[in-house]
Image (tube, rainbow, N blue to C red; front, side, top):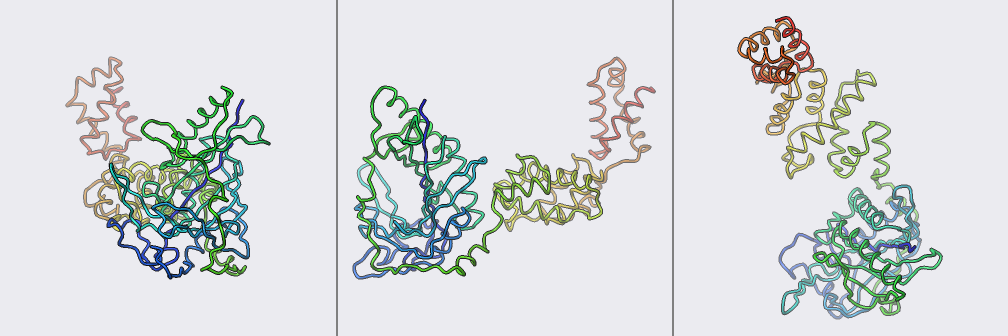
Length: 480
């Protein structure tokens, strides 16, 4: 029985104002090619690079979030290779003295070790057409952080989970948008099969993984491909393979390079960097509450189910808005009442509100509902001032105008009818106009009761209290 041994190499474009070694703007949304360039990022003779301090800070911040050690001294190196997307003929990267090393990330209780997190410059973008290829140098020189795991991952599903959690952490740290569709997060996987984990098999690298789904599908395919080769008595070739999304297979690209092929040597134009403890501690103090810590706290403080917690973790803005709404709930509640209000808030945010958002977020300027108004809205539902049906109308009005829910209810006459005498009067009116349904109920047809409840709701425009209406209607029908 062969076991998969997997490791990931993840490239992340950092969110900085300028490029890694020059003052050119770092703008991933620029549509015009070759306008964000200068002699430095184009590799012209005689120019000198200058280190982007913010990119260094963001790399160290990431390393600390992944429990890495931060060495006191680090340096940049030249990675030499020739390719059309590399204007200088070499890439300024890091080899033996990275900014961060020996960290880990827990996935479902398992520690996935992180070998290193280092910083380099991105390459240009190649655009392949039918008869030729074009080069856009806008991306050349953008700060590119690389995170390399140890071969600790044991399944395609676990690899996907690691990549998804990594993206979340990067966004919580605000070091990158980490959008895979825009190439801001690029995953490459190394895979081998073995029968004995003490001795790994031949390693194959897979590129072109531009979605989390592709990561899982490509690794599942490659595990199956290598297993067939080994079971037939043949040997797996060490190579780089690409993922063909359309055919759902990996395809051979080239033989895998070794480190010596790149002729690494220290970058002569940049000095070694000495990182003080004070500098590192200041960066550490900026690290916010991370996804796993937030999951544990939401479970402990709000007692939500895992599915809802995950929605608030993934939609960071919505999770923060949820907590602001909870802080606006009445302070004189019992523990039971508060728990019920919290669950009610969670349900309305995740279902009804998200149905209205349609492309905007709760942090957008176009979003008009304040946490105070949403908290009041939830309290009105809980106290049965409005029914769930009326609540949808009120929430829609709040979303469109930003108005206070109490004002909306007053202006539109939406207060729930809870007076039993008033409801009984309406029941009599409805029954007199629907005599057939009354007779059907008396004959044992249960659907007739629901029909009559619906008619009362129509008559009251949804304002009759749904908790007492069935009881009052049943009592009336039995007495007819």
